[in-house]
Every structure is written in C-alpha cells, then in structure tokens.
Length: 192
Image (cartoon, rainbow, N blue to C red; front, side):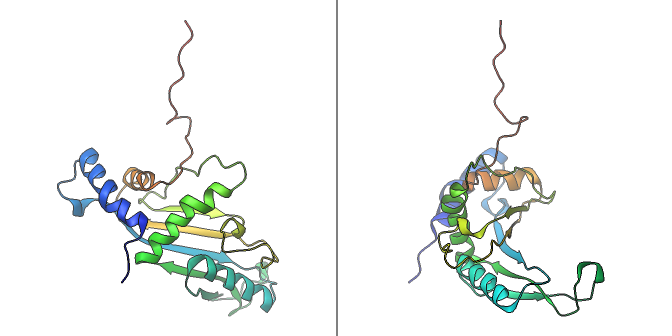
C-alpha cells in the first residue's frame, strides 16, 4: 500500500484551494500542476569510464531511478567531441517519485547550500522553472567519500501553467524558496 507523498498532499489540500481562491479559477482542474521533473548532468568530453559511472551512480542515488546515458549525435571538433561519445546523463521523474524529489530538494538540499539566500524567481516564459546546482553533495544521499569530482546538476520543473506568474505562484505555495528581488521586496519607509 503506497501513501500519498507529503508535498502532493499539501498541493491537494492547501495549494489548489488557495489558487482557486486567489486566481479565480472556475474549478480545480484549471489549477496548474507539476507535470515532470528532469534532472540532467553533463560529463566532460575527456572523462574516463570510471568518472562516467560515478556521475551515473550519484544521479541515480539522488533521483531514485537509473539515469539514461546521453551520447553526442554528431562530432564537433571545437569541443573535442566525437560522434557517439558520452556527454551526460539524465532522469525524468513523474508521479510519486517527482513529488518526493521536489520535497527533498526544497526541505533538505537547498537549505544546506552555504550562504543560501533563495533561488532566482525567473521562469522560462511558459511557466516552467530550471535551477542549476553546482555540487551534487548538497543531497544527503551523496557522501564526500564517493564524490571524487564535483558534478553539477540541472533541475527542470515542468508545470502545466500557461504563464510565469502562475508557475511562480504554484512553486511558491509548494515551498520553493524564491529570492526576493528589489521589485518584490517590501517598500522601505520614507524618512520624514
């Protein structure tokens, strides 16, 4: 018997009613939802097989499922890249594993970043959000002994939102710690 992930329960019980109330949706099916989360990690062109296996293992530990290896479709001499050479690995998360990963990202991984002041509030123009992580060791599944070389990670959160405002509001209500920009910061009191 599987239980509903914590963040999905929050979405159903609090986020959907809040968005229906504030945004004026006619019913709950109009409310934007998470579609998928894609994790992507690039690999250096001169990486050896051990380094590729390490990054694949680490990404698998973070995602909870085995990553797919991505190979170059054509040769590019300026990047010292040959056709068929491994250039990265990626994982697509959907359903309960997507909700569990997002919860771990928001509640565990992001707060462990040194001098963390929030993530950028910029979305891609279509309601989707991408964040870059420079070091995988912020996730508790990765230990310093296993991480021989620092690997980065791109996290793309795909939503059904039609605008950036809808997507940002959805992620904010789910707990994404957006950085307060100068435009959204509280106005400073004027000196008399």
